[in-house]
Amino acid sequence: MDFSLSAEQIACQDAARRFAAERLLPHAARWDDEKIFPREALAEAAALGFGGIYIPEPQGGAGLSRLDAALIFEELAAACPSTAAFLSIHNMVGWMIARFGDAAQHARFLPALLCGEWMASYCLTEPGSGSDAASLATRAVRQGDDYVLDGTKAFISGAGASDLYAVMARTGGAGPGGISCILVERGTPGLSFGKPERKLGWNSQPTAQVMFAQCRVPVANRLGAEGEGFRFAMMGLDGGRINIAACSLGGARACLDAARAYLLERKQFGRTLAEFQALQFRLADMATALEASRLMVHRAATALDAGDADATTRAAMAKRFATDACFQICDEALQLHGGYGYIQDYAIERYLRDLRVHRILEGTNEIMRLIIARRLLALA
Image 1 (cartoon, rainbow, N blue to C red):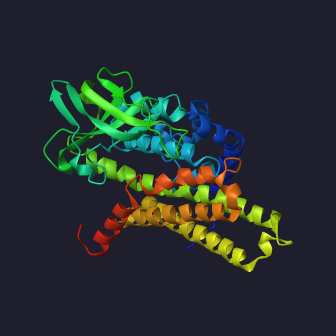
Image 2: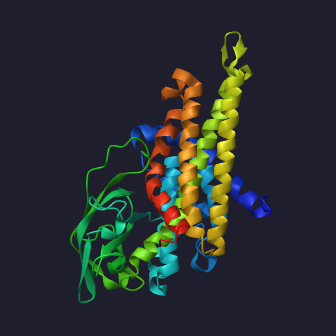
Image 3: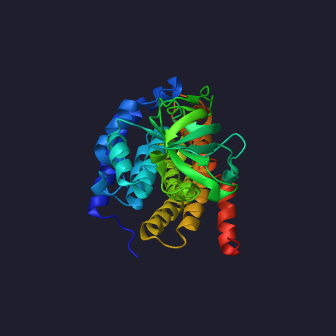
């Protein structure tokens, strides 16, 4: 068991850290405040290979591992969790196309996604089906060589801004076996978007409903066979959960670093805050929680890379633990900053707002507990 990184992994980590420091961090506060979707920065990230991190090289991707991706997303999120998280979603859709698509779909969609010319969104959640995702109601009725889609997706990252939407729609009966994955391009007649949601965080990416009204899409845009879409969606989420946990690591690390610097600088009662043992202990607990979270995320990523039978469970464990622990680290950092932590002149409050949603999306942490418990009790 070797916990050290290879020279190649250190190089990837360094490249991501430099990019984040130069192209994300200087603009993150403005993107958040003005709700700017940074297409140019995302395209630049894609040019570094971050648009298809674990897509195989023969298909044009970087061909890196899930562990490599976790290292990259931690670095990007240390500058801007919101933008890093959107890039994670984009990677998830690209991977689904690379893994389950045919040669024609690879040629049609992957080049634009991998270079950042196109952005992609993942469409599973609906107004009436969140945690109970298999009960989704959006329908795709086959008419000759087309599907006609009707329904609404909710809380979709990139809605209206993305160029491609991976849509889980019902082509068959009730339950997960009746769901297929269909790729819908922006501009398709019958595709429209709701008003942008007003959110606590994640403001550098738009979130809205994606609506289908007699939206006609070629059957050639279906990934795999009919009825395989839900399985594809869940496999995508295994990696997505590790990525979002890695984004939590980055945000929490930035807050821990800020808290450490503040404790060394700020003086009260004639001493720096770092000289008070009670605050030393709090910082120590934050650092320990961050390291425990990182170990769980890296272990889950390694399990997914290896194709381990327990990879789904480990991804759920890592997502549940890391997103909870890292949000708490941000909250502790804010508390240690006192009133300064609550104002926008300091970045702590932005990280805290961005990391809060990580405990909800990609499957709520309550659903993560359900996945873990079912494995422990052999219920599924």
